[in-house]
Amino acid sequence: EMVLDKCTDTCGYLGAFIAVLGFGSFGVPIKSDKANKVNIDPLVMQTYKSTMCFLLSFLVLLLGVEFSFTPWGIVSGIFWVPGGTAVIFGIRNAGLALTIGICSCLIVLVSFVWGIFIFEEHVRSRFGACLSVLLMICGIWGMAYFSQPHLQSSLFDLVETESNEGDHDNDAESTSQERSFRTLSDDISECSITDSGISKDFIKNPEDVMLGGRYWSRRNLGIACAIFNGLWGGSIMVPMHFAGSNTKGLGYVISFGIGALLVTIFLWCLRYMYNLYLYETDFDKAYKALPSLHLREMWFTGALCGSLWEIANVGSIISVQFLGEAVGYSVVQSALLVSGLWGIFWFHEIRGQLIIMLWLASSLVTLLGVLLLSNEHTNASG
Image (cartoon, rainbow, N blue to C red):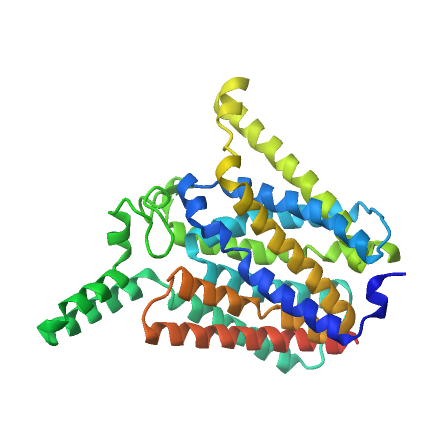
């Protein structure tokens, strides 16, 4: 008998609360000082995530879940690991608040598409579905626009001008304001880690990534990675629908953990093969070119990141199990607000009271679209 068999809806709400905190906070270690100091490679951080996902998955056995494995867990890993690696790059370059916001709404959108076109579910209202998507698009646009670096620069100029026109006795306060609203170019020119947690060693130039024969802004590539994670990684739980009845819900967690670890190992093999191609089959150089795990510096930070994600994953499954997708799945998407608060108040990704208010308003519009679209999906299916 499972421990959860004795639970009521309270367990569902508790699971949702844990999931919101976990999904909204797992990106914090990715932008930590230690990660910045070693310039952590996205695949390395994803390796820590996958390892903890594998190890912690067996804890569901303590809840009375019988051990079972389905190859569909590997399929989920194919969706999650590349998407998870991409979202790490997104968090470190486009910011935690914006990246998780984009991912959350696109995951709901992808789930909605799977339900309608693959599982032949029906929407309660076409108008409601279209309105939901429109709200999500408007919200994402606002989140992206109000997190642009040039807005922070404009705000800095405004604060500096108003300070010069004020009382000269407030020079100390003006200096403090100037430091808190310094521009991205100021941050890049310094050697220390900035207020936003991004070091000079990590971002030397906003357009220092060459792809397809041209330079691309790291922020734009980060946004592209967030979109990729939402569109590709948003299907991670779809394979569970094809698994047997004994490997659904919490019974699927172990299969998912095993699949994630296998796919991560496969990606390392692919990276090594790519290095072999670059170094003309020089095995030693190809091996040495692989990114370091930085175990001494990153073991705790990486383990924390992976643990937060896996605990949140289990919490979301419990939430859906007891509250249903209409309530459980929708409430979990509130994680985008948690990540937004981390990004604003801890990493100072967005500065200035007006800009923060506008960004939060955009995130609320996005969340409203997410909730409405989830409601259209689940009402139709239930």
